[in-house]
Length: 485
Image (cartoon, rainbow, N blue to C red; front, side, top):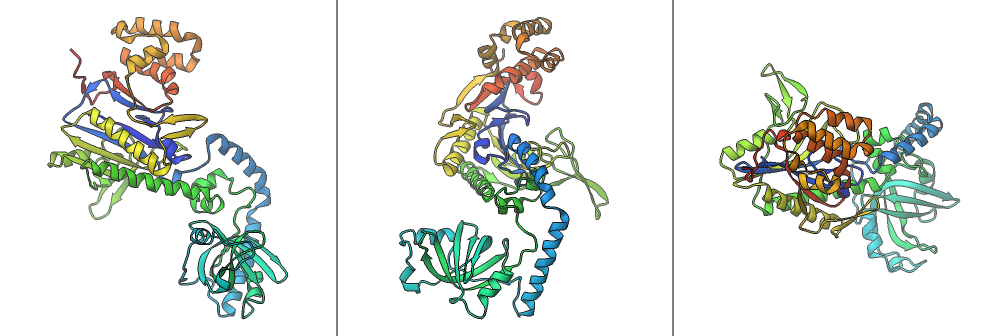
């Protein structure tokens, strides 16, 4: 059985997708292959983090953000929010008293903000499109506002981008300008119609003829200068995070592109997408603690799946030769920025295939995703250039350890005591106490080889690398390697 896992971490969606590994604790760009032979099928597992854990905050930034948030929390207390909410509820009542619905049923819009920015990119400063005859209609959230006597400027943001609303008292009818100044707040979703005008300062604007409040916001948005810096709230309230930090929405868009491109790549190879049960009588396919639920009609406990593996294998038994599933997985274990109780895996199985074809598929998937999202196979990640051009490096764990440390485990054989002595003598100066304890605790030369790889080699593998021939001691479900005598 061959497995390759591609992890899409949350803070940098595509860049982190290029980090390929087989455990949740790996920090390098690697692909692993056990020191074993494949069975009559092979599989590839791509694991993508849940959207609930996707974030643009790195651990270091998160710590700094948390500190800023603690200092700022005193200026945004619960009582302040309750006061704002009470004021806005009164505005809701006032709107209804005027016969206006603060939560509209719909709005006919003609363009998005970015469409207008593109269509009228050549409009000169101070000019109005076609003498004011070009009527447009748009809708979105108000994220900024300025009012000066008989003029008001509002910044409207929709799914595509932002555009300014240019509001002039003489142009609006039925006291709409006064209503705009008194009743429209930052955070409200409004619809506006009018002509297109570029101001003297060069800001493309909708010269508003009429507007309507489509959704009255009852709470203020996070401070526009600091954004949403409460890390916990960014994880738990993704919708607030996206409002306060528009770039976060791009993470979701890129993730959608990645998933779409994975489907294209896999299905171009003849794979069929299937759905397997989420509720299972016995959770299997991995070592993890499941979530337990109760089925009332059956009168028995069921488990949320911890892997899609076993049911996908049954599809092979049933006669399918190439299957895959993009499925939600649930594991009732630790939680952190790197571990989520629910996440998505893309797992695939192919009959009559081995790890060579799975490595080729992994290359195909990642390179297609990179081109779809970035348009290039060279990606900057934390100051290092990651080159995704095929073919990627393929090297055995033995050779990588020898290359990095000079220790040749092939010559040490199965004498664990000698292997530990050589390892500690060679690496002793650079090892901390924890690493030394881990080495001493190894129960076989295979475990020792893997330990040295994880301690010394893994962090140095910056470019995409397939790590082959894992020791059989840590690959209990795999066949012996075909080259073993």
